[in-house]
Structure formats: structure tokens, C-alpha cells
Amino acid sequence: MEERLNKFIAANGFSSRRKIDEFIQQGRVTVNGKTIFDLGYKIDTDTDKVAVDGERIKQSEKKDYIMMNKPDGVVTTVSDEKHRPTVIDILNSNTKIFPVGRLDYHTTGLLILTNDGDFANKLMNPSFKVYKTYITKLSKPLEAKHRMALEKGIRLEGRYTLPAKISFLNDKDFTKVAITISEGKNRQVRRMFEHYGYFVNSLHRSEYGSLKLGNLKPGEWRKLTKQETESLLTNQKPIVVKQQPLKDDKIKDRGNKPVPGKKDFENKFSGDKRKSNSKPDFKKKFKKDGTKKFTNNHKEKKFDGTKRADKKKIRRA
Ligand code: URA
Image 1 (cartoon, rainbow, N blue to C red):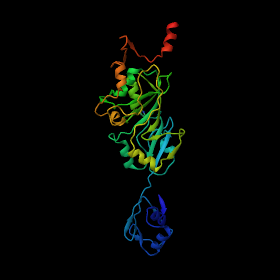
Image 2 (image 1 turned 120 degrees about the horizontal axis):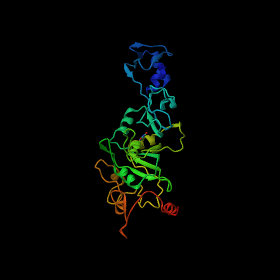
Image 3 (image 1 turned 30 degrees about the horizontal axis):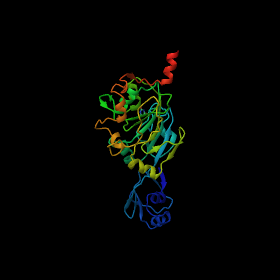
Image 4 (image 1 turned 90 degrees about the vertical axis):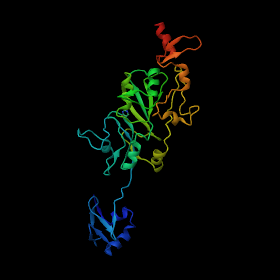
């Protein structure tokens, strides 16, 4: 990029532009070893080597941190060989911004972009568990036994997924669920549901670590505040998923409340040790295969996600 010599030196933390002009007039500034006296001299910031009193001035890139609501039909890459629109096209930026991780072509929602490689590497490091919440519409109602298995972790391509948190968003429609995971394997959420024969009709990331998408519309973006970028790196609290408890689903949701006997929710939720994520209450009321225990009358009943009122209607019909 072409830039005026004095502007370049000032932008890179070396005194005011007026002072720098004095330095230039005094013959203290060199470009590629050659002394420059011209105050209007322009340099190529990518290739020219600038020094003041022999001390090299390096381009200190300003760090940008951006949150975008990725729309459907956009690829999460810097460029696309098939010439599909990219998230960088949306930004229309000439700085070297790149996405942190990726969302599928058809996944919408919260995406972070930055030019800070260290920041991106830290967030993407598998050992640094960032909790991500996705809202999904499934092709059929999610059964309790599948919810339980997915929460505990399932074997996908030879490896177990870490414990997840699944909530129903509607007490009548069990196809609408929120899932929070702390991993970022390729197509992970889709593959988790597909494992039990559910097709993911839509997928939207609403939360990433401590960030929530808020009211950003698809295709809109904004810069993160310093506080937000810092909280991403430090405040790794799991996200509270707003949950509508199901009347027929006797699973007592704990939200983010600490598990009895455990220090905090994170203890329970960090799962390399293959710890069970099922609630004590859940264990009391359900067997491993999702069969409900009826301790009073010893009857067994499969929980199939159908509400009692609906069952009555079915029986009457
Ligand atoms: N999981 C998926 O399956 N797709 C995404 O885009 C993100 C998470």
C-alpha cells in the first residue's frame, strides 16, 4: 500500500507528524538506506524499509476484532474458487481480516473475524474450550433418549464428542432445540443429529463464548469492544441457554446451576474425562435406553416426546 512517509512513521507510533517532518528535513530519515528530504515522499508500506536515526520503523498493524451475523449462502473463507460470496466480501475491508473458525455455507449467525493471528489461534485451540450455542430446527421431534445420549457424548468417526447441553425452545414443538457444545469439529452439530436420523433443517449460531449475537441482522457486523475481546479470552463461562421446561419431560433442567458436589458448572461441562453430563434427577427417572422408570407402580413407559393431551386425542380418534 502506498502511503506518505511522514504519515507512515506517525501511524507506527513514532511521534507526531510535525515532529517527523523536522526529522526528515534534518536528514534523519532513510528509506531503504537512502536519506529522504522530501516531505511529500511516498513509500510502499509492504516493501520499503523505513528508519529514523538508523532505527527501523515497523508497521504495527492495528488489530481489528469483528462480530458478524453470517447470512445463509455465504462461504466462511477469505476467497472462494467457485466465486461464491465470502464473509470478507461482506466486510469490504482492505485489511487482512480472516474468520475465526468456520460456519457451513448454510449456517447463519455469530462469526468472529480478526487480523490478530494469536487471538484466533487461542480461540481455535481445541484445549481452549469455547462454548458455542446453536439454534436448530430438526426434521422430527427430538426424543428424550437421543437428547440424553447427545448430551453425554456420542461416538463420531471413532471419537467421542464432549458433553453438550440441549434445551427445547418450545414446549409444543420438539423439533426446535438449542445445543451448546465446546468443540468445533467439521459439521459437528449436523453430524451429531444425523447420527440418530435427524436432519438439520436450519442451523444458527446465537452465542460464542461470552458473546451473544444480539440484534445484528444477517449480513450486518460490528467491531467488538476491548471488553468483549478480553472477555472472550478470559471469561470462559458457559452460556445460559434460555430453556422452556417441558411439562411432560420430567428432566429437571439445571441451567447453569452448579452440580451438587462440584465446584461449578464448568466442572461438569468439561468432558475429556468422559464424565456423564446427565443430571442426578434424570438418572433417577430414566433408564439408560431412555425408558422411564415409574417407581410407584413399577410400570414402564417409553417417553416418545408426545404430550399427554395429544395422546388422549390420538386414543379418541
Ligand atoms: N456445526 C455444524 O454442523 N455446522 C456449522 O456450521 C457449525 C457447527
